[in-house]
Image (cartoon, rainbow, N blue to C red; front, side, top):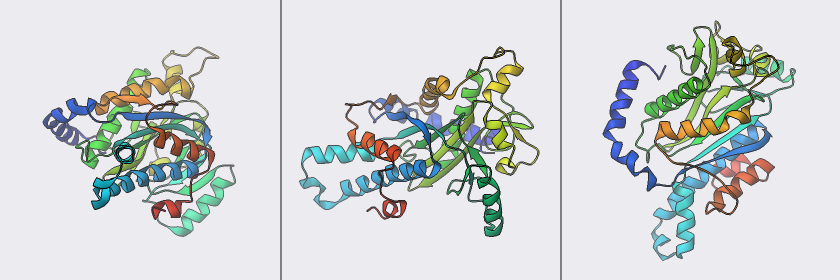
Length: 308
């Protein structure tokens, strides 16, 4: 697990060494966040992530081009906003099982995909790390698209902060955290509530985390050996709060209830200002791309990856 004491000590030392960079966060663009409406199909969410990251990489390349010094100020400002802005997308997916890069057997993938699709869910082979997991209604998913180089974070320390953010989140919701030598957040040696899976492309992160909020997530997780841990079952905030007497009969906890808390704690863990995307703000380029992604208007993935 990335969250071992040795790693955390190393990451804390690195954090202390880069305090000046953290204090200068107010000079940098804030992390923009938004909660996507409805339930987003996984592949549509993936396309949106890829499009935002490719736009950043293309903007960085354009600003480094020789002719950039001859451009009008408005064009340069627009490219800088796209190149320099980190984004946190918060959402719920339609039911989907995703296999990470560790799942490599084509025959097994095909058989498992057929079984899970028959249950009414999508099945996708993703580029994130890890093994098979579930995303769907009742679960908060966060896609963190962050320039970890500009944030002076190694990949391991970036993941460590992500894990510690989820632990902060669990504690704030009165959910116990049990440390284990596996990536993610566990409430006991045999119950898991939060998962992490990332991909880094040219120092910009994709994918991120998921955290089970509502009881409805459990029935779907029971269909798989989540993350390859045969002796571990899923749990959720509602179940854990009921165990502790924090929820009365008939009461529940919804994903939308916890979004503001997640945003606040994410910003604190990374030492960054969080700013919600709003109509009329200066981040028109990002807002337009997110709107196009939610509505299914973005170019196909193969064109995005080619920078078309």
